[in-house]
Image 1 (cartoon, rainbow, N blue to C red):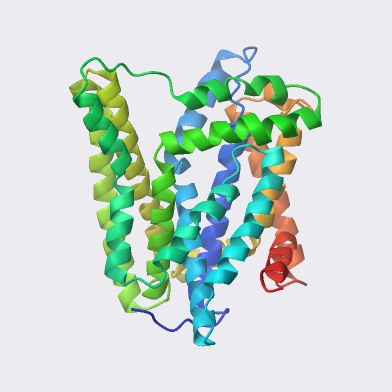
Image 2 (cartoon, rainbow, N blue to C red; image 1 turned 30 degrees about the horizontal axis):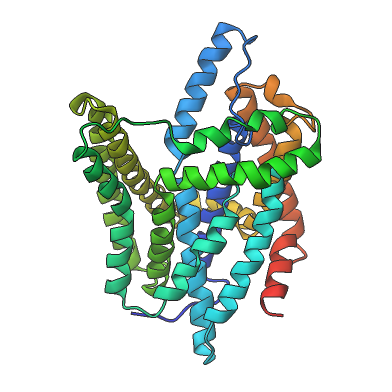
Length: 390
């Protein structure tokens, strides 16, 4: 069912922009902890600092890793629906324009990958084509397709093959071979070597890792679910959507608890490493999906409470400039941590990196508030918008 969209000032879009801002903020904090994909823990740190770093790392990764990326993907599908529906009301087919828009996003992804090999824009540009395929399907057909993709069919097929081959021995993921080559260009002082390494070796590593961890199928599924949320007006402030998100919150908490518990017991129950590794990939993906909906439903419900709304709505400007913020953090972060810049990866553990991340967020947030006072789009959003409708 397709419902009419409210105008750009509606609470529905405010909550979406704020939620997107929350996701970008959390992604930024995680990227800083990871030194933008270069895992390194200084050995000279005192014992108490190493202990604190471990707690900070474990807490933030438990809360955000695999969840905020999923929120971003969900909202990508929602944004597609808005644009598709707006054009449909004018009697226009948005699909061709969306493919052109995806090509532009691919270019942004290439630029961002020059600084940060873990870029997701390239994947969104390519995997977003799935929305063109399903955008005119019924809700039921889209939902069934999304569920099938979320269940990781390729991992279940691999698991069956492993179970049928007792001689199969688990090997290190192929992505590790490429990740192992990162140090040469990330710690070096040549920016050109970094760009070359990120675009060729690093991009191969990330593509392989994305496939190995089930995100190749999970991401289009999240796009489709976001589109369905838009179709059914579930980000609008209404009693129907309020009841929906309350049900989602309770169901997601229960589902996450069950999936997380199963995941923890998998190595105990399945002694064969190859089998347990595949099951952990499957259940980790599903657990992250459930936790993502805990975040989304809680955020939407809290956003409608006046006392909390005043705080959460401040993230709206940050979310409206999500593309600019995402690329900006890659450029600044790579300079802070990589060898061609300040090389702080050698000196910062998780706690110090978190403080740097918070500082960068506050600076970017201040910039967003200032910029949006006199502009309707962020810098890169404005370019993307103009070129989309050229």
